[in-house]
Length: 340
Ligand code: ASP
Image (tube, rainbow, N blue to C red; front, side):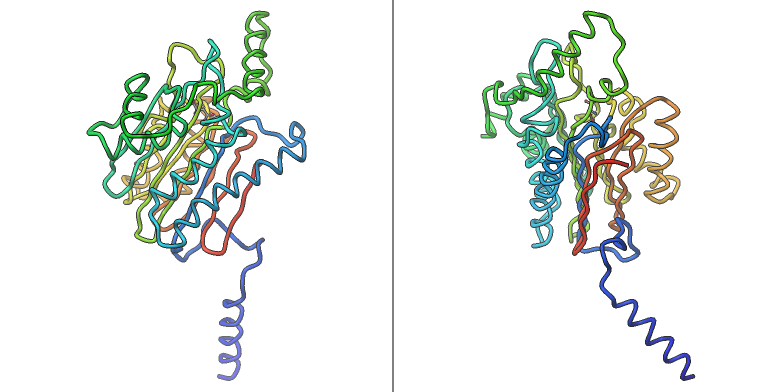
């Protein structure tokens, strides 16, 4: 009997010990009050190509983005506001391929895409190929909340943004030297018809941003924002503004935001596929992510990754590329990462 009491006391004591950082996991058995996960794009991101100052800058901005979203969730705010706040920080940073710092099209312009979806009502909004809206994610939200449509593109979407009073900027606002040089490099390679190295291919498509959040009311919201792929033509749209491909949210299963080679994510409706596997087959979020990112996408040659949160607050951040800028937070827990 005494042995049993001592054993029980020891068990309770150990269970009450605060976790150290090593023990923190994105998945726990207890549903958290809130959860938030962000990505800043997947691609050929390797330590050998990154200087210390740049790496620090990425972690700093990822943390600022988490701060913005988490402070809203912590004080009982809604996941919709948290996702918008977190994504806006990354759109405003020249480090990521979204908003300021977006990649250039073949004819030297920046065309931005974004989408957002809420898991309670499954309302959604998406904008494609806009050139003067400072924060395209706010336009996606306005389309969802203030129109009867889901998707608007080009001049019409820009006119709607202006009508809604969103911040409009000169297209030159989105210029960064780094992205301009990437375009020049690719144009040169194309002209010389040299094959792109894996690194250069990867650099064509990293930096999209996204966020998924679960609030204390149990609502999951997912959002994604991007400049697309360097050297894109013909008003090409990727997966980011396509509901079901780059973004999806359903409170019955999960919320997802994707990044990677958009054409593959569109063909295999990646974000919706994760939710559908959970809904129809009853698999866990992790099982669904493993199936789609490491098996299906790999078998089809689709490079990239995604972030997801399920209704229990479990978080997954799978990617089959070399790296993915990413971070997550739950009450008292936080992590930002870049490489595998
Ligand atoms: N998925 C985006 C696109 O294809 C690019 C990316 O995530 O890096 O437009």
